[in-house]
Structures are given as structure tokens and as C-alpha cells.
Length: 334
Image (cartoon, rainbow, N blue to C red):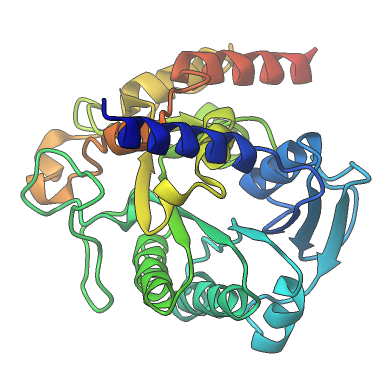
């Protein structure tokens, strides 16, 4: 390696080490009372950051009990409110979203709300804006074997046979959010999008291991065909690790990253949950002849880019997350 390249590499490494020091750095986190937002706030507080957590209503939310965290109520979708929230902030992690069934609401909060907060962050001179996105943005009916970060996204106005999210509008609205985010990036905002798989972890708002298991237990979650539909999974600790590597890192500016650590079948997931409950009902079956290839639920979403560019390695596996959740549910029944 030439002396110049060596100097650049050393300089980069020193910069990244400095960027990891968050002590007393002002950080705004939207969705602070939610699953991902709460975990991010708790991690930032442990790192010594001065965290402003945007919440719907201030209260005793998991992860927000540190004196380094200030809860702020307000609608980030309002431009004036967003400007006040971003004033004086160095970094922004945008974790707020709705998974509601109303398209207009999903677009107003997930898409236009993201644009409003990103514009406010840019105007305030924030150094980096990390947007929590989802692999649900991908157009999984496109003719591809896997969906890396350059794969086509869902488009407003199109009808998709299936959505990996609970709402058919979630992926569309989040795809629109990314398009608006990249427009702000062209105007000068340092932005990164992290596209998460289904997130495992214990929190009152956790979908996959807190809200879904009672439905599985009651026999309300069906298996399609032989149950081989894929789920792309990650763990909340992995999400925090990805944010840790990206936040303030110039290599992440202008980039989107899949954060997916395991690909499991629906049958493996459902049967894993049923094993937690001795009284679990059998999962209903949708015969294979009632499904088509156009109904593909999801496809592999490799995380090779974040591993290659940011040095990401998962912290916990699907098996770890399921074991934690199983122990939590068994503890509730004792």
C-alpha cells in the first residue's frame, strides 16, 4: 500500500473511532416510544449521547428511563414542529412509522412525514439522518432470485398480490418515503436508509414475538401450501449494531442497506411459536392450489453490502431471538 493510501486509511480509521464517540452529542430519535426507537434511545444513552425522544405521549416507556433522554411530544409531520425538534441536533434517527390499514394515513406519516423531518434536519444542519426502512419496500413479484439494495421498489398506484407487512400499504408508503428522502439527499442532507427484516425482540409493540404469538396460539395464522414462504429476520440487537456502524459514518452517506440476518420459512417460524404453548391450536392450511407464483411472499434480501462497506456482523441469530421470546412467554405463564 502506498504511503498516501496508508495515510488515508489511518485517517479514516481515526475518524470512524471519533465518530463512534457519542458522548454529549445531541441526537433526535423519532418513534422513541416504539420498539426500534426505544432500543436506539437506550443504546444512545448508554453511549453518553444527549437524546431527544419524540413520543406520542410522554410516559414510562421501555428504554427511555435514562436521565440522558428527554421525551418530547409532537407531530413530526408538522413542518414547524419538525423544525423545532431538529434545531440544535447533530444526528437524527427516524424510527417512527405507522402500519395502519389506511393508505392516506400511511402516506401522510410514513412518506410525507419522513420528507418533512428530513427537510427540517437538512435546514438545521444536522450531520446525518438515518432512516429506518423495511424490506417491505421491494417489489417481490419482480423476476429476481434475490433483492439487494438496487432491486426495484414498490410504486404508488400499483396493486401487489401480497405484502410481507400486516398492511398492504406499509411497503408502498415506506418506498415513497425513501424516494422523498433521496430528494433531500440531493439537496445536501447526509442520509442513510436501513431496510430491516422482521425484527425479533421483547417490547410491548413488538409485532413478531409479542403481538403475533397469541394469534398463532389460537390457530389464527395460516400456512400457505407447504409453509415454505420465506421470512427475512433480524434481531433488535442487530438493528442497533447496524445503526451504531452507520451513524455519523461518511461511508454510509447516500446508501441503503438491508439488515437481514436469517431467512426462515413460515412453517419454521409458526411451529417455533407453537412450541412455546402446550395448548397451541394447529395452524390452518391454505392449499397450494389456492396460491400462485405471483403471490410470492418474500425473497432473499442479502445483507452483503452493509457487511462489506461498514463491517457489519450480526450480534444475535433467529434461534437466539426465538429462544429469548420463548423464555419470556413461559415466564408469563408461571
